[in-house]
Length: 210
Image (tube, rainbow, N blue to C red; front, side, top):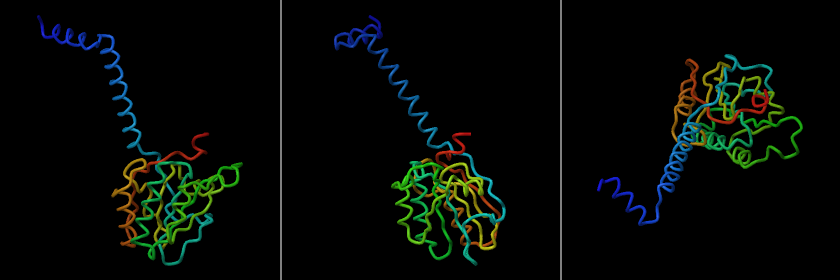
């Protein structure tokens, strides 16, 4: 008797029919594909902004003289942005008195009162030294050319662009990453060329609806 026949007979004794084996194989294949797709999504960045090389004078944010300015454009309901807010907290632990930080949450036109008051907003508001505000209808995001929630932009004290991108390693992932390191380096060294890193997050509504 062949090895294949022996295995088949044993499976039949256990009540496992070829059809069950086929279905199990198909199920395992679909799970594998789904996990691969999820992993690909987690590590696929969103579009990175190309902000003005000089601080946009039309912005409602007023930079503090003599200090770099960090702006984070965020969507209050984007789960990926929780990690970005957590990394801002890490950054502020080290550089609270050396950088002016603003997190602006998008508030679409017509949204009900309190729409933006999510756990992500509350986490951001709890970070000492961070100014949290509303970006009504994405006006500020448009000024900085931000498309993806979690977009982080740093200008030096002279108003020169120093960093654009994300400060997480993947969607919703906390921990050391190139973006956070680049921002820290730009704060420590006042002069230098602009750098970038991938940004991971949901697209803003104006992009989703376009």
